[in-house]
Length: 209
Image (cartoon, rainbow, N blue to C red; front, top):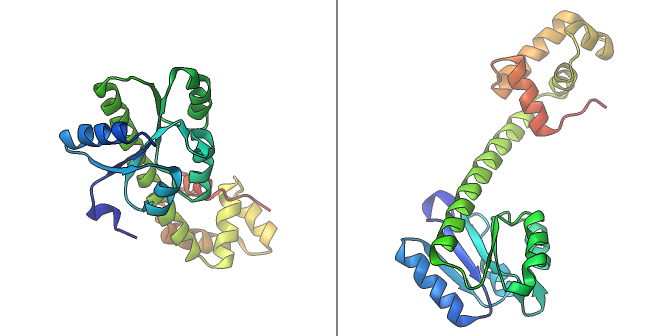
């Protein structure tokens, strides 16, 4: 996998129309973007590196698949890059369903170059935000894994709204011991306040058993 920080974001164009692929490739290069062109969904899935930032410009109708099916394939392959759908007039209802499934935008052909560039800018911004959030989640998960089993129990109960005394009763511990585990958990998690710890528990979807 390539390191995301070492390469520029890529605009992936997936369309079986070679002339349109080439035109979009030229458009993106003209404004300093890096395009990569594919004639089919399979070509894209075989060649993409999900670790590299970017977005996908996708024709709603491809040989053997539809944009909606392709969105499902992306999820199954762990590819979270934002999708921009290109559509013919008769495909607009399908594109609306694609938007509901998470696409950033759909552009009816023929579209203006500026509309495409604007959509790509929004998609790139969304991808950067998603990657930053995922990076934060990964850090929180890693910190949680450093907690002892008892510290995890205490964190789960405390962030569920229980007082130290209640946690002590639930776990058959002294209140002092609960405070020690709570302080250790907060330190390892990098939480300055209980509110910080609660937000981290929400990110981890911790639930009291």
